[in-house]
Amino acid sequence: MTEQKIAVLGCGLWGRNIVRNFYNLNALGMVCDLDDDNIAKVKEQYPGVKTTKDFNDILNSKEITGVVVVTPSHTHFKFVKAMLEAGKNVYVEKPISTVAQEARDLADLADSKGLVLMVGHLLLYHPAVNRLKMLVEEGALGDIVYAQSDRLNINYFKNDRSVMWDLAPHDVSMISYVLGKNPERVLSAIGCSSDGNDIMDITHIGIKMEGGAIAHITDSWITPKKHVQLLVRGTKKTAILDDTVPEHKLTIYDNFKAGSSENVQLDYLEIEPLKLECQHFISCCETGKKARSDGENGFIVVSILEEAEKIMLGDRAKNLDNVDFALSRTKK
Image (cartoon, rainbow, N blue to C red; front, side, top):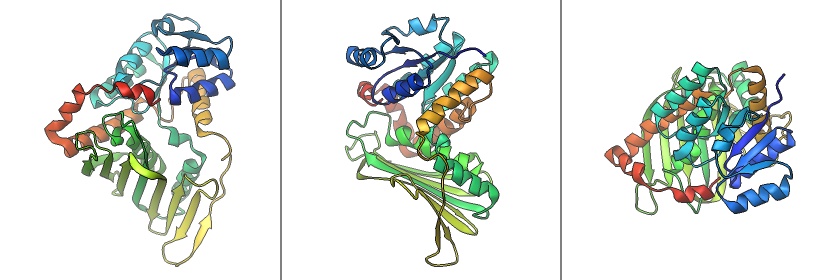
């Protein structure tokens, strides 16, 4: 079996976590970043790891078998396309793109070349999310009729097209994964900007899922107290997954008995979900199997968010195509 050597493109705040995990998995081959300070930190913390400021060094390296793209979302398409065309397996942070057609093109390109394309929908690798998915599949909640995901936090940079593009990829991918159903269409989408521009820092999306369940998603960049919670209601019971608490993250409630609740025990909760995601990418590169969060999954998520943005902003959505999100380099 070929030894996997992974390059990480982008070593900002989030990229450092990915670098750490692939290094600990003995798979880190190269790190690329334009920032001298970021490169200096890699050299200090991971002696012997190759570093570069030119992504062409990754493209031209015969040693590198896979690449993780951790750059601002508006750059994803060009970097992922270049890596796939160079024959590299790719793991790209969410969203795969902010344009559905670009996401479709990347998924098709990966398939045509027989390469792995994986999107960083991190919550698909979360032990609590996977336990909840098992409960749904077992019918423990009954038939699923409703799901609600709230992801509220503070972001002082506001450095993406909107909070929806920053956070909702997690919510859409997680709900689809847990329910085992794809989103069909956007029922409603509203947003507002506390700064009075077109970069929405609070968004609310209603989605109809396959099979008839309704999903509501709320995301915020302006909530000082972090709130991250998923509710899934079935015809028998309701599950609440609270990812802000250190234990008892998943609780089941009987719909017909007041005060009735049950904490669900979770396996491997002490393992960092990001480590599980990185291990999954390495495994897919070794076996050639499709990733759990593959290019098709990325396309479906982007299609829904693109539709929601058009409903929210109408023709004004085009204005965001010309915004310089240079500050987003500080995000990851």
